[in-house]
Length: 362
Figure 1: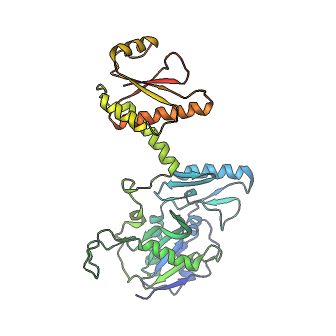
Figure 2: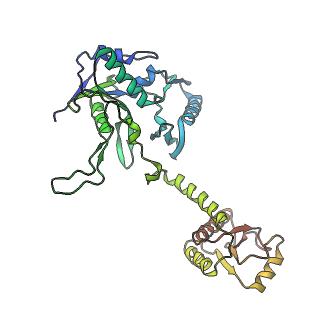
Figure 3: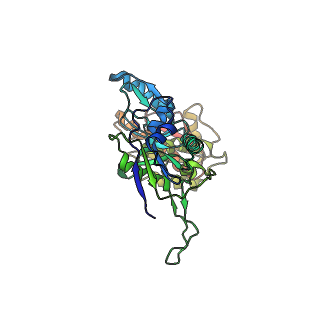
């Protein structure tokens, strides 16, 4: 295979309503069947009118951008300071939902195309029907990568070729059957096209020649084939977001475990599990003798007389506000450990005495 990467020069400024097929065909009369067009998503967005007006600068601009970002966000993956990594409504995970302020007037922001696969199909169809050109089309945009510095272009939309080349089931030269190898070839072609496009050169379209033979097939899944299913994503959230989600889920689990009486051995395992991670000075005491429990229950109205056991917690003294925060975290750790053992727990009103005491009914 011998590949060529060719720039499409002379496209100029694209505005809403422009006919991209005509613009590209005029600028590149040398296109051939089997070429792969790599088209920067920004000119697709401009032609489709995916622009919003915002103030040119100041806090009003920041506020407007945050509002636009919220509208383009399906879920927040991670955040740090002003940076937001989000999943868009398309399913892409990227910084700021792909909202771009480069190569556009300062009072406007460019959003991603609503359906990049549909945009790619529309452009491919127009070039085929009006110019008798059978080319594949990749709509590309710049993304960062987890664990690696630097940006690269990837495919947001594809038409006329499969997004993935699947090698599973093939046998390598050593006789090993390939089990997992699926190459994201459209991302590789998008990155190749970016080598001659660039942000500042005003070359929004590149042609990769030599990869494809001419094909009249449109029966492909588009770039959505590249989006990893949530069930297979081991890194679907940032650290802080995953921790918050885990804590919330654990608290729900602690309330949701069945109503059967607590197994004292399971409770003891939970206490042992948190013994070395709680704040120094925090003490949890399991009360499971009926006569002692009866006396404790009588102290505070509302404590359940039929609880199979009680765990009393006391924070270290003297107390400051951070001690209370740490004690609350210790209680939550214990509830998570209990839930892991299948023990339901309910946080009760504090018993008489120290305001930093608390109790769990099991």
